[in-house]
Amino acid sequence: MNLNREIKQLDALGDEIAGVGRELMAQCDGSIFPCDALAFTVLARSLNLIRGFGLLIEGSSYECAASIFRLQLDNVLRLFGVVTCNDPHGIADQVLSGTALRKIAHSTGPKMTDTFLVDLLSKNNQWLPNAYAVASGFVHLSEQHFQHMLMQSVASPDGSREFRISDEDGHINEDQKRTLIHTFSSVSRGATGLVKQWASTRGDFESTEQLKARFSNVA
Image (spheres, rainbow, N blue to C red):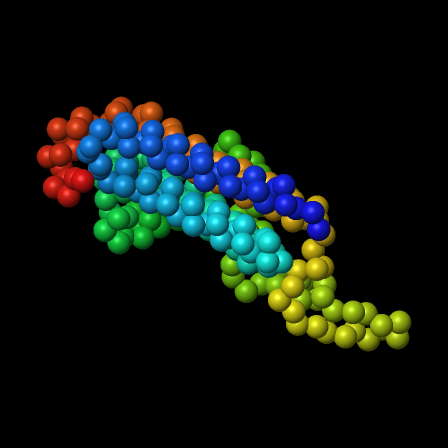
């Protein structure tokens, strides 16, 4: 399968992440507060996920690559939840201290469970609920894994079936792989876009002096 061009385009995502990281660092001007640290963490995690995704696609591991897509989607959902709260630094501080986001209430009231975050982000992204459900099916043992295993088996004319267990993804056609790559790239750019948006709006919250008074662990 000739997916070399699509795979090479993943490298451009790394350059975009580096650029946004520099932009956020410039906005921080030497003072990094909790939501800044969370945003940098998203960028670092994205770089690792992009590298892993590319290696898995090249290594004919479609199911694992689909799981990586779900992890990148997690970056977008969680950062979006934090930056849309009235106190993003306070929420981020709890997360960085080890509190699960699902236990923290959004400014609108509900706890920030995955279900809530998907509903919140899907208001402007109608494709999200289905993509989240499909991607989650690759993370948790589900019928999707059975279907992929079944697709590798061979049916006989007499109605019997020869089951095969393989770590290859030859049963996945090129269009399916290309779609996954493009979707992963779009979600990766969504994560980068959220960090870029945060960089441009972080000054709309408390002043640097106020934040220094709140957080003694400022970098």
